[in-house]
Length: 220
Image 1: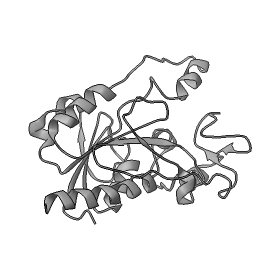
Image 2: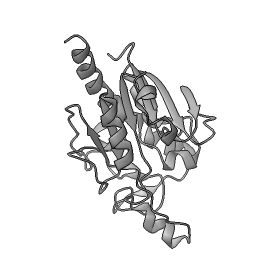
Image 3: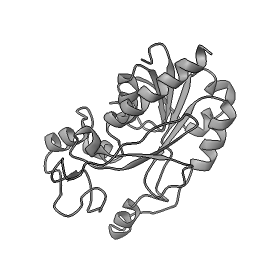
Image 4: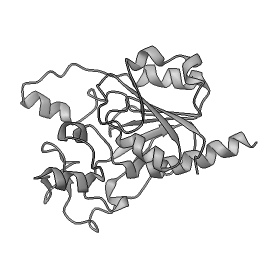
């Protein structure tokens, strides 16, 4: 549906969200500070903040972003337990301001409890996935979230730690890469990349809604 529409994915990681947008028909370009060796689409390695200007963003039809969520993620407690740094990072306000200024349709993805504005929620169980991994999506385009189908999908599988959202009672952490790949619907990442990703099914669902709205705007 999104054929010919260009989507910029900020903080793209290894491409979980990007893959879903691409499946929805968008031509995807990703930006992140990491090496991007396994990122499957056009990739720009750099600090996202260097690209938050209207001149650059104007090249794209849609802007998607997954700003760092350490301030709000439940994994901060896991990092504390492991003695790792928990320096708070919250780039959501800065990114939102730039995306609004661009005048483009945008979407910001983040974890539950993050300060997104009127977000919808998506759950892996709605797509038959073994992960739950609830995620929120804010947009200036009307979007519909999903219901949860936890009981129908059986015991959930988590990809890290002992988080209640990831691994509720009765669930377990993936024991092998093959199990983790299947649970997420991703087959090109290593474990550390899966930890920070969302399943492509989420953004395929979101991308289909976005493309319909963007095409409508173009023709009106």
